[in-house]
Structure formats: C-alpha cells, structure tokens
Image (cartoon, rainbow, N blue to C red; front, side, top):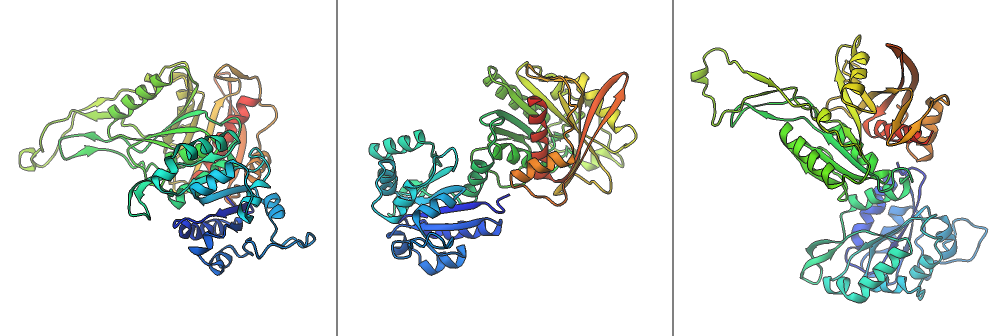
Amino acid sequence: MLKGKNILIFLSGSIAVYKSLLLIRMFIKEGANVRVVASPSALKFVTRLSIETLSRTTLLVEDSEGWNIEDSNTPNHIKYAKWADIAIFAPITANSINKLAQGIADNIYLSTALALPNAINVPKLIIPSANTRMLENPITQRNIQSLKQDGYTIMPSQHGNLACQEIGNGAMIDIEDIVFATKKALYTRDFWRNQLVIVTGGGSNEDIDSVRCISNKSSGLQACNLALAMYFLGAKVTLISSQIPLRLPIDINIINVYSSKDYLEALEKHTKQHNKQKIYLFMAAAISDYIPKHRNGKLKKADLGDTMSLNLYKNIDILQNIQAKNVIKIAFKAECDSQNAKNSAISVLDSKDCKLVCLNIISDDNKAFGSQDNTLCIIHKKDISLYNISSKSLDREFNNKESNNILSRLGINDVRLETKYAECNLDSTIYKEYQVSGTKLTVSMALALYIEHIVLQ
C-alpha cells in the first residue's frame, strides 16, 4: 500500500530513536521512498551510516545540506519538505514538540519541519517519546494542542519502562502502529472520515456442555481485513469478533465475544450508545443457525453410549433483530450451492432489510475460510437508498477499469484484483451485481469504495 509514497522521517534525540531504524526498514520493505532528517542530538543515539544504509539515501543534517538546486538528490531542507507525501516525527521529544509548536527553526530538523506544506496537503504525524513529567507538563500539553489545531495528528504514547528508570506514560508506540497510522493518514477519504462502522467477524461458539461446543470454520480474517480497510479510509471502527487473527491498530475498538448471545448484546449496546449517528454495520460473522441446550458439567462418554444425540433449537437471527433506523446493514452470506446462491443472497435484502449482501460461494477456487484471498459478489437492488441519500440509477458502470483506477490512485496495486459488473432480474426487480476477487484487504477496500460510489451517485 505504500509503494511509491514519499515518506519524510524526522528523528530527534530520544533513546527510542533506535526503533526508527526498524520503521525505516518497514517502509522500504513496503516499497516507499524514505528520506530522513535528524537533529544533532539524534545522532548521539544512532549513527549516520545506519540511517543512510537503511533509507538508501543521504541523511539531511547540518553538514550534509547543499544548495545545488538542479540536483534532485542534493539534501536541502526546502527540497526535502517539498518532496514529502507525509511527514513523520518519530520519535519526537518534549523539547522538539515545544519548539515545533512555537515555530522555532534553530537547527536543520526544525527548519525542515517549518518548511513543510500545510497538513491538508502533507499529513504530519507526531509520535512522542519523553519522560512522563516532561510530556504531561502543562506547557508541553498546551503546545500539543496547538499542533493539533494546526492539523498535526498526535499519536498517543504508551505506558512502560522509560530510559530514566521510571515506569509511566511516555514510551513510543510500537512500530506497527506507526505504519498503520501512516496508511490511514495517506488513504483517508472524506466520505469515510470519522464515519461509525461496526464489523462483526469470526464464528459463534455454542456450548453443548462445559467442555464441548458447536462452532464453524470462520477464521475472522475477512472481518479483520474489512476493519483494517475501513480504518485506513478514515472510519471509526468497532470490531466485534470471536477471533482476531491479525495485529490491528490501537485505534480500532475490539470487542471479544464468544457466543451468538454475546454478539447480539455487544451490537445492541453499541448501536444504542450511538443511536443519533449513522452506522454502517458489516455483518461478516458466521452465527450459528441452531444452538444446543447447554448442560452444566461434562457429559460422560460412558453415559452417552455409542451415539450422542443433540436437540438443537433455532437461534435468534441477529441481523434481522437489529432494526435501528440509523444502522445501514450489509450482510455476508456463504453458500456452497452455486445454482441457487444468488437467489438465496437476494432473499436476505428484503427479509433482513439489508442494503447490500456480499455473497461468498465456497468452492475449490474460492475456499474463503482461512484463506488470504476471496471472491465476493456484492448484490443490491438497482434503486436503493442509503440513509436518505438516493441512488436513482447506476447507469455509469462501476466497471473493472474504474474500480481498479480508484484503487490504483490510493496506491493499492493487487495484480490479482479482478472485478465484474452485471445486472440480474428476479420477480420483476432489477439487481446490480459487482464481483471482486483479490486479497481480502483489497476486496474490502473495493467494497468500501463501491458503497461510496453508490451513495455519491
């Protein structure tokens, strides 16, 4: 996702600066172009050689700056600032925070920062690392608020062991979270910015007794990738799942659940808390259609004999039960019967009042469960209304070329991405079909962009 992006990293004099070497390496591995600016004190902790070896370019410091404007590779604070797609201050000390907020430019680090375009054009991430008292000092906090007002994104520090032998707030966040935040800053779209999104995932577990349960093969991978995609596009995401197989950003609200009852309670609680706001609900969880009557203790094999019989009862339909008017429901349906799969999926639109249904046809070519790839067929009525925004028609096809171009502009290049667009007619109702294949993250991004396309028509 970062291929071809120009990332400018600012290093200041914190012990955490050694972690930034790993950050540089991760960005390079993802195909980004990386340039680095270091304050004089940063080089007391790491060497210039290490930085230049990993970034594959000249480090901008006081004695490396040149003024040969015609040479694009000449390190220069104005040229580096103009070059950047995003600026990341990782780590930044309390001293640098306070100077940056006041517009002080008494070294190459601060001069480059002051020369950056505004935050609308070039996102700026602040990743603090400082002693607890220095970071939480009212002066520092006022300057952090000032930077926020100027458009900087302030990432929280974490609680941990500090270099001063104290335990408290001020440790730099994990490198993975900085990479997540970078992608979000680069890919946020106005449509999804701060939009509330709930994603359910994994499979429900229904207890037979205190030891055994009935479950299914859902891995939670599609839901995690969907939550990631919505996070990258700028949404406020809550993930309700029985399984979390991926490392996710700290900003995603994760609710761990076990049974179908847990899913329902979590959904009802969250939708009631936000009943005044529009919510997109992606119901990707595989909920048991039938559940056993739970028995306390363990059923003994000796008492059961050669066969074990279970009485199963029809479970509550969670998606049908969520009827809040502010919730836009997107269903997910898995089928093995390819002949009747679409009819089965279409029935969900009316019976459960869903705006879209995402059909997974399980086959040898599309195993879906536990796989990194997926094929989704997104189906909806030709004329739909998403939260009072009417889509009168989709005459301008959201075709393979258009969807790929949007993803490409976002820097998402998946050679396996394939899309198809079609119409089908059932009982005099016209339905639109948008089929997308690729990695689960790419498929999730395509789904989100398709929803945006429908609403903005």
